[in-house]
Amino acid sequence: MIVRPRRLRQTPEIRRMVRETFLRVDDFIYPIFVMHGKGKREPIPSMVGNYRLSVDELLKEAEEVKSLGIPGVILFGLPEVKDQLGSPAYAEDGIVQRAVAAIKENVPGLVVLTDVCLCQYTDHGHCGIIRDGRIDNDTTLEILAEVALSHARAGADFVAPSDMMDGRVRAIRDRLEKEGYKDTGILSYAVKYSSAFYGPFREAADSTPQFGDRKTYQMDPANKREALKEAAIDVEEGADIIMVKPALPYLDIIHQVKACTNLPVAAYNVSGEYAMVKAADQKGWIDGESVMMEMLISIKRAGADIILTYFAKEAARLING
Ligand code: PBG
Image (cartoon, rainbow, N blue to C red; front, top):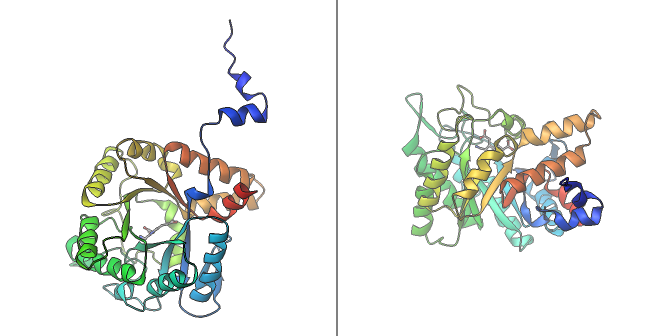
């Protein structure tokens, strides 16, 4: 007797019946870059279809995201000035703080996450404070906690530390609890690799390090057991959701992290993953829409419960039909 798996692929209906993984609009979080000014909508050349938005334009975008059924957005700020300590990152009237408050007031119901990091705000472009030419972990923790607190005060539902300093989830959790923000959650970029796939983002956010690289804090792409160690530490320190980043070259990591925690697992389908699809699609070398959906379902199949993706709106439109 021949075994005939093709029986289960004969018609769209049968295939639908035996399908194992589904993408839902509920799976997505849409990343947005926000800047000072009014009426600003600057296209990001390497991330076709994405913009740097002033707060008034951001509100229109947030409305659109909400109307598509996408549960939330993650905000990245572009400050007017930068300094050594990244102080615009925790200014009460900083760009992210104003953006969060505006969304909370005008687009109720949309979940607002904020990226907590210093690289867009420091003049040297590193994610931490520099002392004697090195990134000083423990000084950085105090500032990150200050940034997270300022986002919580503005009304963020979740703060998302992406710096990869040791101990930052605990430092942030402690600070939030102490100040009474017990309901503000932490989505931790627990497993963040030192990746060339962040290129377009760094252009968009003007956050390229001015010397050296991020290899002393972001992870070596060759390491898998270290990913499990990082994930376990952040769970222990009080993260509510843990994330793996980038997504596509690290599907094995998503799968393993999912197996070792009961927390929701997020994956960040980063700027370079997005840009490659758009570029090849524009050249007519691939069908961008099909590749997008295949990419997203692979991330879901690997185990991601939540996908942060610049494709969120496009994919949502397809799913909604
Ligand atoms: C900030 C941060 C980065 C990304 C998210 N938060 C850049 C980096 O670490 O250099 C990358 C996101 C993307 O590429 O889409 N630390």
